[in-house]
Amino acid sequence: MQDAIRRLTRRFLVAAACWLAVTPVVHAQNEGDAFVIVGAGQPAVERMLRDFAAEMEDFTDGRAKIAVESGLVSSATVLDQVQSGERLMGWVPLADVAHLAPALAALTVPYLFADPSKPFELLEPTKLGPLLSDQLREVGLEPLAYFDLGGLHLAGTGDPAEPDAAGQELVARSGELTTRAFEALASAESSGDAVLKEVDDATLVEMGDEAKGMRVSRGAHAREIVVLVAKRDGFEDLALDIQETTKTKLTERAAAQRNAARLLDTQAIESFEAAGGQAVDLPEERRAALQAKVREVVEEALRDTGDPSILRTILAYAD
Image (cartoon, rainbow, N blue to C red; front, side, top):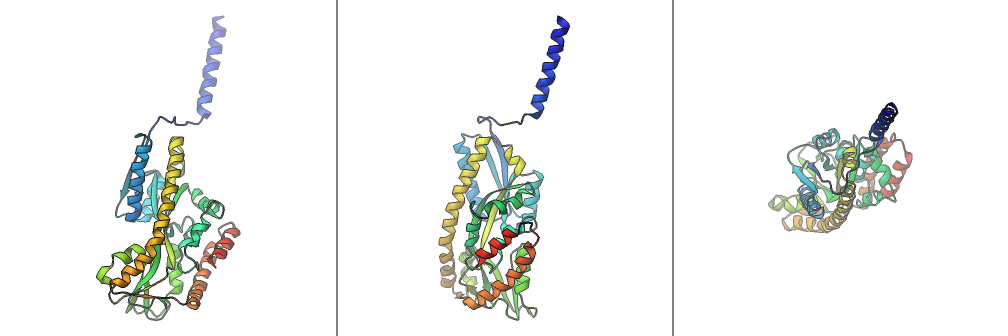
């Protein structure tokens, strides 16, 4: 009898061990989580995420403790820290994920979209959003929010209406696909005597006296989009309610921030002109010619993305 009881006990323990081995660990809602969000600058995003961190801690009664770090680190460093698990989340300009998700980076290519705000329509869940986000998920990243830091313009001593004119030097922001697009635009006879630099709305507002004697393109040639990503498996390890609350709060903040960015567009040009700068309009025929040049770059970059519908849809929205 005792031998039978011992055999049953052993079988129970073995079965229990097997059950524990295959059963996923799920956080109870009364458990807490602490993690770090890191970024490579963009003060507006940093301020927003610090507010988000405070809101999350208050909303969860202290269960979610989030630290926000930003410093003189590159986008590559931010992405490495998130992918390695050193940090749970990080934010970078969308242009800087071209090596991971070329189709996403295409949304900020200069002059590609006749209406630079169209990329945000493409990012909607009913459009290309899921397919574009899957490019990041394939490398272990979960996109949580897309922020709009305003329009991007060419400003400097050159002619913003003729960015491909001979003798002008174009200075672009970082990003593999962005660099290739500007290389397609730049004249082979650049002397550097006239310089056009790609700047965002916030930079135009802050220029002050530096704007005197400079010119800027009145219309934006792209939007400065910033993506907040998380290490996917690390994010899924958070308590379920903290995951859902994080997504909801970030979606709300991103929507509000995009509305504010649209107001900044007009203010930026007005501030530049008030400081003594000149805003230059880009004729439609010139815009179309520039679009044709960068379109070739995008078509080549996205030719092997695996899903031809992505390229077709992006180009359809570009026009």
